[in-house]
Length: 103
Image 1 (cartoon, rainbow, N blue to C red):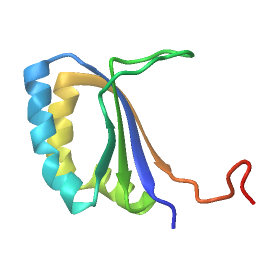
Image 2 (image 1 turned 120 degrees about the horizontal axis):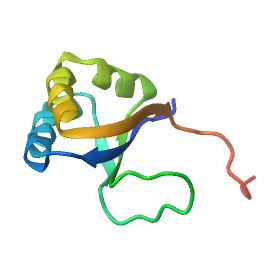
Image 3 (image 1 turned 90 degrees about the horizontal axis):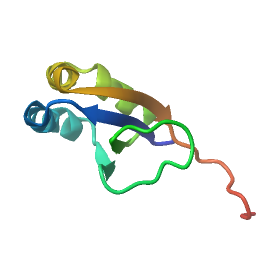
């Protein structure tokens, strides 16, 4: 079963409130087996539009990624984030198929 991912591009509008979001989302992330692969950091944007912050979170499955976002535990954190940022978020299934150059 492929893993699931949240891919988020974020512009933080209120740093202090956003720090509260980071604290508030910990319970939901732990419950659903989240693992942060990207959490801010340096980046280049050679095409399209960018936001200031990028986040990639891995979950054990696509279903777990969806369940986390829809959970009561995450709802409280989301309410905080919506007050402190503008974001584009997708939830996507990983790919377990063949890779280029591999047989």
